[in-house]
Image (cartoon, rainbow, N blue to C red; front, side, top):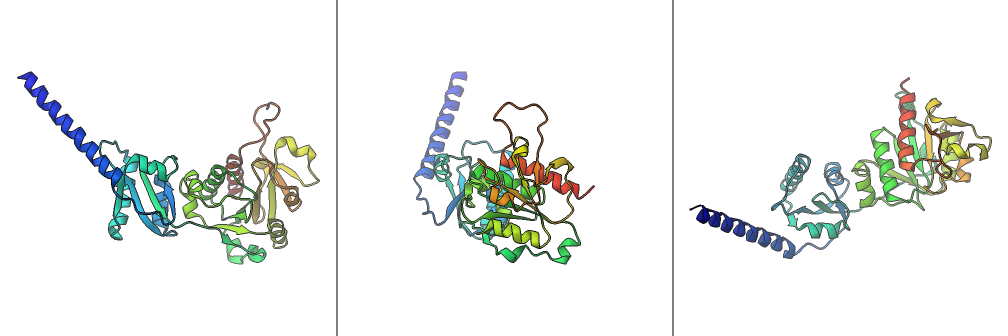
Length: 303
């Protein structure tokens, strides 16, 4: 009797396995709509894109759920995606893990990919740094000026820090800087979707114009570079106090803030190490540095 029961249970398992393979095979072979925009992937970027409405959503792809475990976070996210699709009467395409990996170029997709219209930076003119009196009556604005940030992971980390720490605007150079790609959005944990990123063709001219309109322009440098710099004041960021609207300039991952831009700065900020450093290890990743400096600047307004 036990043997018969075990045999019956085994048959049920075999049938379930066949059904699962059949479902996955169907997901694999079902015709996938041709891509119309770019593939955005990951829970946070995709949900942010759905909520902000800045992109056109062409198609929604979810991982086929047969035989998979779903975390509470992912379950909540999937429910939101389904509600979004229902409200707009959009079809959800259930596809295999392998299909999603192809769409995301094997980057972490967390079971969700959207075919969306791309985002681009909004152009700024030199005069767009004029200060309005109603802005100054509330608190001092802090803008980030990014010069030549080329690593999408760094760019994403900076956007995440800027959003979390309340930077009022992010400006990039029109050339030699990352585009607003899905890789950047994923690295920003979706902050890119909620941030309007501006671009300027002449960063040096823009910073000079900002100074003439009452902005403090502060750059960054490593502690090791302090002795090599011009007469521009260098300050420990933990001692710096915000007294005027401030433009924080962050430079390229390799060579930092260009000398041309350093000359436009009224001060240079440095993050001192808390232990002796070996030769060649003189600075932090630009994304980490952005978070520390922004936090120091913003909290200095509250003390």
